[in-house]
Length: 289
Image 1 (spheres, rainbow, N blue to C red):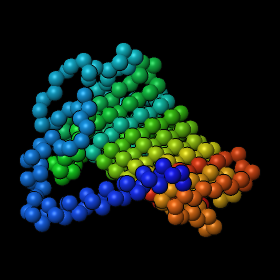
Image 2: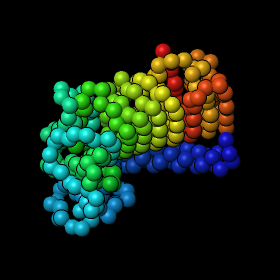
Image 3: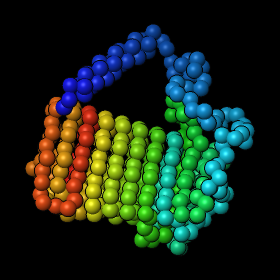
Image 4: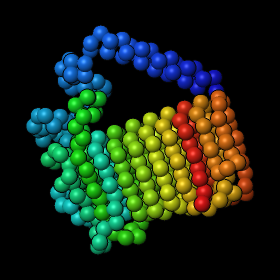
């Protein structure tokens, strides 16, 4: 591990410890969550320019208008979509296999009306689904879940590219097929089952990912302080490996185990497929069956 990373993780751990101590002191002095929320009604964090509060009616200003190449649609059914983009805030997301040859988006389980925006590209090939959520942290947001979004896909439907960006989300995905799958998660928990992916790119902060399925080509994992578990079909020797772990752990099969500080390892099995892992203070485990 480079010297810069050692300094970084030392500072992070020190600040985390100091934060815990101050929280304990505050609780001992009688500070409550309700008092905190009253003092900071809009939460703590960086507020984006296009932030929308569901406690007030929003206006149709220019910042909310789609680009010229896109159409914001109100329909719930889509066909011939090649690319899927998800940008989801605090809610539950489920992707399931449907009963026909169309993509269905069911946002009836969301607790706030018009919380989900569905945007179709001008050529009809890219569907983007976004939830309008707060950009700041708030105890009220934690206590009140924003509902459930369900997406139904045709059986054996294969996308060219799927991009998923999650905040504080619980995601359950079953039967996803794509040439390229990119996942960016914050503090979310995501489970993907029965997946058939050619290239997998994972970037996780403090969240978790459990993946079950097949990756035919490349795997790229960037894990901060969360956990990533891949359950892949095949065997350890089916991939080459480029491994870099700062303060976390990497386990691959039964024989490869990297832990401690500043650990790097390259393994060439003569394969055309490569798994590249960069791990900060998290946990990455790859199992084969």
